[in-house]
Length: 260
Length: 295
Image 1 (cartoon, chains in turn green, cyan):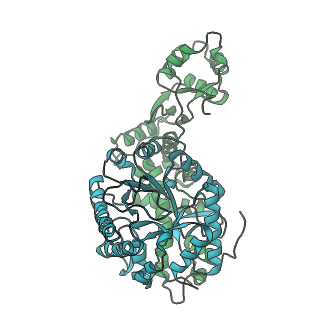
Image 2: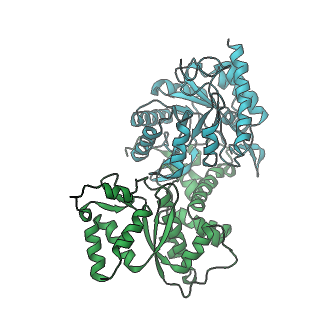
Image 3: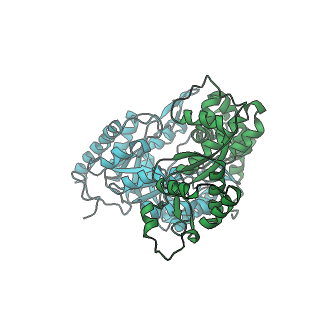
């Protein structure tokens, strides 16, 4: 970006908002101004950023409560203020940052944050047209299905989280969560999850290890043959045809050439 | 016949800036999508903050497109930082241009403020001094945005909470920016009322200084007294009904400007759709009154 002006007043108010340092405010406001009134800009910055994080990380906010979340959010905003001219999509690295801030006994909140973010990424992802069983049938017989550029919908997300956190997060999303009862995660095991949005609603499917392998590879290669070969090499009796039929039925797949 | 002229009971459009009907519009919120699309109120139009729709897809964008298929939509940006020390972020303008291409709003507006500096977005509308240097900055910012989206914009007057360094009156400042950049103006009479109360700007003189041909839209909104300072500091909250003093100032503005599209803003404590439309109807009444006087 080209520098266009000395920017003293920009710098002055920026430093006040970020660091509560009022020294440069005189470049903008007339003499005798009340610093306490200027604080509305500082308060507005933190409030708007915090509200964006609450909106995105509703599960974390639910479990932490407003006060604790606000304190954490403040630290995150200080370290990672928004950079784009919109708060939509702000906080992408909040889960990783949260992980570095929490006591190990609360590490499960990182998975909660990852689920929150993944769900939103799916919700706001591209509106791809899902491949249907009918569309598959209409493909020319001479075409080799395995080599067509078939992959997951652009909004599909694959994530691995603690299985008990997943249950708690799902309860939160369906309004069945009791905040008084924190999830007991001591015995939690990793659970692979697929989120996708064939129309306007996000769906979630828990994946077996073989399904996870297959979908990760399909997402990477956009090629049924390659993904199939990988999973069958590791799990020879894997019911690939059954999974493929379910994926088609549930609108998880797309022809890559359409929008990806 | 233009869409603006087709609205029954209201005067034909006269400003070159009018794209939406010369009638009352309201802020469009996702919880109102279905009712907004179905509403048959004559001349009703809607306004959104495009920053809330800068995503690849999903129900929010789809809802907006459904409403846009049946009613005029106006974009009211809050994140371009036109008065920033750096030119507006090219990526932000490109995102906005893509959204404009997708939704085809009838009007695009922004604020005479800044919100980004040295890589940080402050998510707020920050004030500019009214100096020649700040004006030159702002003109370049407006030009950058207009070039980037390929169309002229309207520029909104800010809410003032403290008196800024000033080489000229705010109205003169904005009129010169408009004349030199080719943009139009959006008069927010709630902001003007707040500026009058908070820093002593004369709202009557301000309105008289605005050439009617430059003004393409008026905003009205609710405000609140600051919890700490009380009536000494009024906050542009968009979270309450429009105050009587602002309704009165709307009448003053319409008397000077003539019939102009009026947008009722509401961003927090959003009431149900019927209540919002009911409040907007008062703006239509004001427009009908001024239409009669303007023949």
